Image (tube, rainbow, N blue to C red; front, side, top):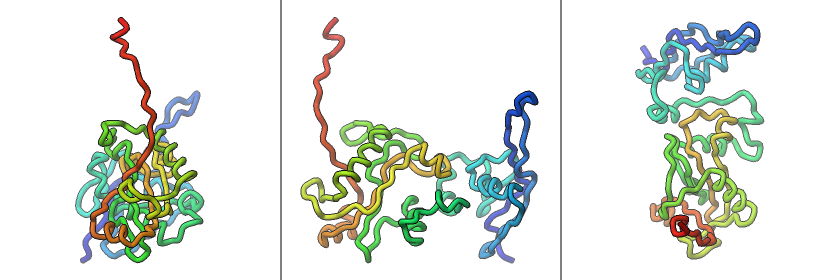
Length: 253
């Protein structure tokens, strides 16, 4: 007998809505659903439009919090796990949303679209055959909500990072080596993940950090060898700053 990969037990999802003069009421979207999915099995759920299929999928993935019931994945009930403890499971549980215009990028191949999900979870970061490398250029806030400082103890706000990314794409699009020489790579991918964008894309809170994700086509063979052997294992952004003298308020007193 095949083991169960997923067990849904009496799962319910109710939404509280305000009906105006009638006051607060509950909308029953999913009510007492139970089923099992065995290893290697393809499971189909059929129902008319509006019956709760998408809501059920979002609740299983914890995009929506379940009202009650259990979601047992690979033997563990994940229905009440914290966001941090849910992170490992997000690599294995994924959802393809119905709207192709918001889910699929027409400028990307199917392989690239599928690969982005893998890249986001750190499963791979380079394509040896194509000499392409992908990774985070900078992270402002971790998936757990921690605000990060750089090596100079500066904090880059998400809005500032977003504007810097847009300016880089508009004016430069070039990768350098160790802030010494340029022209060793060209930009092929740039995406800034902010809280608002992730909400719009349906990415559950706590899945990805707030940051700037980039991809480069490496054009220098020596640099690519260093990427492959791990000498260069991360990206680093470079910028210019203007020093402004700030008077100490206490000295004026």
